Length: 483
Picture (cartoon, rainbow, N blue to C red):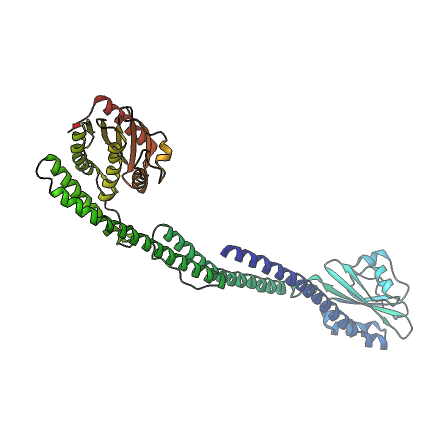
């Protein structure tokens, strides 16, 4: 917008300057020409009194020499044949083409240097003034009546420099004034454009920041009326979004808090089960559930502060080992064969530990909910320079529609599915720049492949293919089997 205003102002100003400067420059040129010929007419008029009194050559020569044009050699007087010629003088004009072209009648003579042609002089002798072009300039031919009734012709030479005197300077001044107007107009348009653009840029940056999750961003309400209205609308929208998110978090916290009552009853019942592995596992599961509910309530009360904090990340292999210890105990009760591979080294990923725990529990929980007892499953981990792959495979019936399973609210299928588990996994992977894919596993059932980018920007294709090949090779060789 800023440059558009500058371009429009530049175009308009240039057109206006040209519309005024070009005619004005031509007027200046015409004025200089008129001034030069008016001066020539004034010089010619100075000889008229002398011609009206006498046609004596000596007296006329003194009159011509006393004038400014005559002293500069720019004046000549053509006297007709009725005059008294000076003894020994040539009656034809000297130093002109007219001298060679024709000679006047007996007794005619010229005073001074003539530049006009003889025919132009004879034309002017009929009583009509004329301006004729001569080498180096122009010649003004002014007829003057003599006492004898004939006409003498006064010739005044006007050089080109006299006709163009001051024109170049005037044109330079006009060009400087025009250039100054253009520069001033562009500078003014730039300042006005900046006044329009800055509020628009602030609005665009605020919209981008709001899209990144910075809910506290607001726009200063200034600038033109339209941009002020847009800023007011943006601030109102941001306040509404914050209010809606606050209400959503409050609702999530309230719903989580309602779980405390049945959870308390469940904890009391688990405490009365007595001793034994099954009772201990039940009490551990209830305690874990209680911790998760407490954490959900605290997260819902944070009012978005968690989104503003940078993610510190966690050790993916350590988290997977910890969760497999929990799920392996349940798998042993149901007679499931468990295989865990690739968790021997520490691998950090830019995901908070609670989020990675939730994603793993969602995938492993789907195995227990949607496959029959005794169905084997495996968790394989492989990491490259820029990505970590986590594969959860089972020998169950598989997922009929993998694409629908990844859409929020559809679920992996089967009764009791809320459709949120795989969506949680997908959001955790995409937060690092990775993705989630569902396919057929080598065990014959479903394979959930989660790719976590280690730098948060997503891996390259070549390393990803190498990770896949290494993982398949490790699977063929077999892996670690957990309890």
